[in-house]
Image 1 (tube, one colour):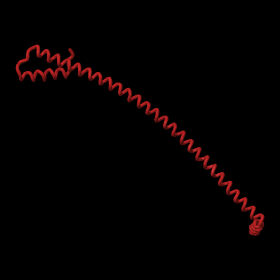
Image 2 (tube, rainbow, N blue to C red; image 1 turned 90 degrees about the horizontal axis):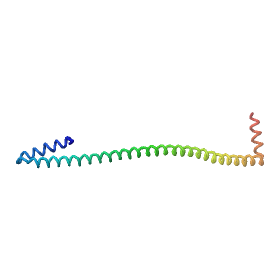
Image 3 (cartoon, helix red, strand yellow; image 1 turned 45 degrees about the vertical axis):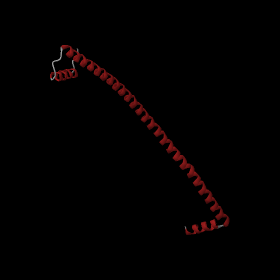
Image 4 (cartoon, rainbow, N blue to C red; image 1 turned 135 degrees about the horizontal axis):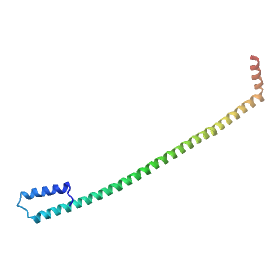
Length: 133
């Protein structure tokens, strides 16, 4: 028979309560001890079940942590790829619009120089600049 603190406490408490009453018979004491032992076995089985559930919960928690770490790593990789793609897209747009702006300025300057050439003002302005030099 395995004695633990609960069995001893119940036995002492049970006998103390019975001491205030009439003296119990040996059969009643034996039934009380058997009842205490059955309660202790039931409590031990419940404790074992709780330990098993705790171990399963710990295992599930470990697996969930691994999945969370894997997901965080994947998120970091995808975020890095997105940042790289955004940087490339920004440079592409900068060059796209910059080239259109430069082309527009070039066309406008060509029109201005053509106008000045055909009206003769370009040669007059060039002569004025050459005279100052």
